[in-house]
Amino acid sequence: MVLAKQFGRFVLSLSLVSLPGCQLLQLVDTDETPTSVMMIDHEQSIQVINKQMAQYLSEDGRESFLNQMLVALESDNRDRFKGKDPETYSWWNILVQPNQWKEAEIKQATVKGVDTSYHFEFMDVPYRAKTTLHLLAHPDTNSFRVGELSKDEDFNAIAKVEGEPWLLVEQDGMVKGYIHQEYARSNVLDHDILSTKPNELLARSENARQITSKSELFGRYTCRDLVYELTKDERVTTASLRACRKQRKIWYIDVPETNTKPL
Image 1 (cartoon, one colour):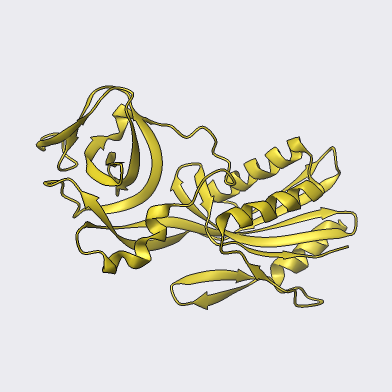
Image 2 (image 1 turned 180 degrees about the vertical axis):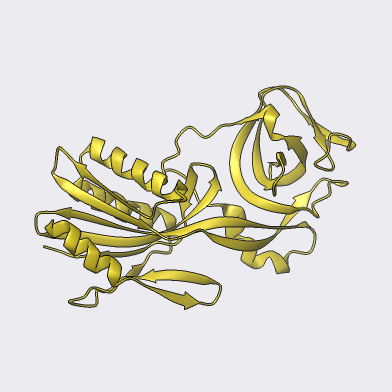
């Protein structure tokens, strides 16, 4: 009951701060204003979150917490989640904000003839061909061929045509054409948010205008702001992060904002 009241005050004091091009969650405690640390380096951010979990959660509890974080990010009808580690007797609470669609403009080296004028959902997910596949210039079965993938050949699905079952294939930094997603399978072995790397393509998008020798790709991707609280006895750690989506159940940490309350 005490935890519920604590998290209730925490949630009520949460406010959105608008910044040029993005939104960040600002944590404001009712008793004091904590010092927030913006983590820029992804690996450093992972280290901070792992350290927090090590202070509160067992191995099984850690897995349950991260799984519930993924459930929260995928949920369309709930925004609050909670759980307990039966081994350490620690509790967690998770609050997730609505989806935010982010527009992006990318420039990427492209095989001659491949049409990149469509609107995309950016992915950056490793895939493997189920069979020998023709690479097509357009997302259309009647399109002409610009290349080929062998059975079991690996590639990167750089994007998906918005609203259509077509993947844009990238290999060695080169966009090589389209294939139907039915004939490929994802190579992602672990969907843990901490083990998923950021989308490097989107990280480079800020410099897109400086690149003149590459094809333009326009599209969007989904991000959600998420707040979690870890509690044991009188110790409470709260933090917020932004997670962005590559495809269903594959999310990565974008730019987290972290605060820890010591004993």
